[in-house]
Length: 526
Image (cartoon, rainbow, N blue to C red; front, top):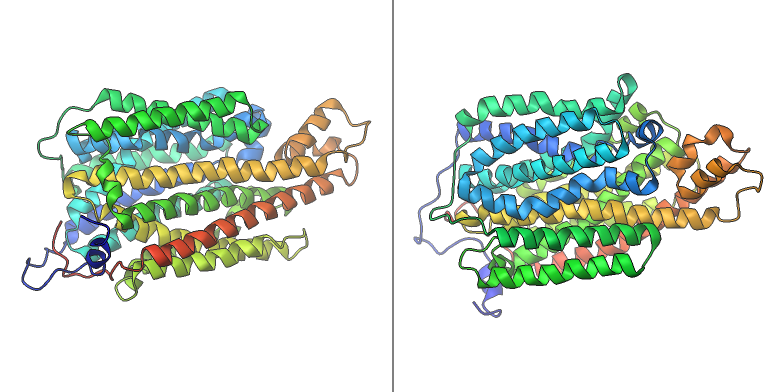
C-alpha cells in the first residue's frame, strides 16, 4: 500500500454496500465474559498505583533508599513492559484463555509474596515477579475481546470498558491503599488478588472462549532474549540518569539497550513468523495511537505519583482521606472511557482524542499554579480530574485503533504493543517526572539546612520530601514547611512539562488521525 492510498482508505471504516454481511452481535455470555475480564483488568491497574499512598508507611517499615523506593514503585510496570510482547505472542499460540488462567494463578502467588515482604529488596523482587505474571494477563484479556465481539461498535465499546476498568484500577489504587492503611499494614492490599483470581479460575472455562492462532509455530527464544536485552538495560540506564544524572554507566546501559533493540527489529523482519510483527506499525492510525498512549501515560503516571504525595505530605491528609480525594478524578476517567467510544460514533476519533487532551492541558496548567495555600487541594483535584479525563479517552479509543486494526490471529501481538506502551508510559512517567520534581526539590533545599542538623536528618531532608517526613520530629521549626514548598515547586515544574507535552499530542491526534471515520456498525468482521 502506498502512503498516498492510506488517507482514502482511512477516511471511512465502512465498506461499500454488498461487500460483506453485517457481523453477528454479542449475546449475554459475551457481556458476562467481559464483566469477568474486568476483574483481573482492575487488579492489574490497581497494582500499578497501589503503593503510591503507602510509600510513607512502607518507608518507615522497610527503610528503602530513594533508589530502592523508585524500584519498588515501578519494577512492576517495567517488567510488564519487558514481557508483554513475548506473552502476547505466546497467548496467540498456546491459547489465550489458557495463558490467562496460568498467569492469574502465578499472580496470586506473587501477590502473597509481596504482602509479606520483610525487606526492600524482597519487595522489589516480588513486584518484579508480579510484573511477569501480569504480562500474561494483559494481552490475554484484551485479545479475548476481539474474539467475543465481532460487531465493530460492540467491540469498540468493549475496548472502552476494558480500558476504563484498567484506568479505574489505577485510580482505585490510592483509594484502596488509603482504606486498608487505615486498618491494616501496607502489605494487606496485595492480598486482594487472591479471591479475585479464585473467582476468575472458577468462571473462566464457562464464560470465556478459547482461541489460538491457526498454524501457530514455536516461540522464537532468540527474539525473547533480544527483547529483554533491549528493555532491561535501557530501563536501568533511565533510572540511573534520573537518580544521578548523565554518566558513563547509565548512558552506556541505554546504548546497550538501543543496540539490542536494533538487533531485535532486524531479526523480526527476517523471520517468517516473528515474535512481534513489525508490519503492524505500517498502519498510520495504529502508530499514532501508540505514540499518544505512550506519552499521554508518561504525563499521567508521573503526575499521579506527585498528586498522591502532595495530598499526604503537603496537605497533611491521612491515607484514607487522601484516597477519597482521588475519587473525583477516578469518576472523570470512568466517564470518559465509557462515553468516548459512543461519541466516536458521531465524531471522528482523532477529534475526540484531541479535544480530551486539550482539556487535560488545562488540568496540567492548573497544577502549575500551586502555592501551598488552603485552596490548593481543590486546584489539585480539579486539575488531575481533567488529566484523567484525557486518560480515559486515549486509553479507550487508542486501544481500539491499535487492536481493532490488527488481523484476528495477530490480536494478541497488537494487544501486547498497546499494553507495552501504556505500562511503559506509566513507569517512565514515575521515573522521569518523579525525578524531575525531586531534582527541583533538592536544588531548592541546598543551603537551607542549618549546620547543627544531625547527619541522618540532613541526608533525609536533602533526599526527598517523603524522606524528610520520616524525620519531621527532629527538624527545627520552619524547615519542614520549606521542604513542602520545595516539593510544590518541583510538582509545578513537572506539571508544566506535562502540559507542553500533552499539547503536542493533541495537535498530533487532530492532524494525523483526522482521516479516521466514525465507528460504524456496518464494518465487516476482520
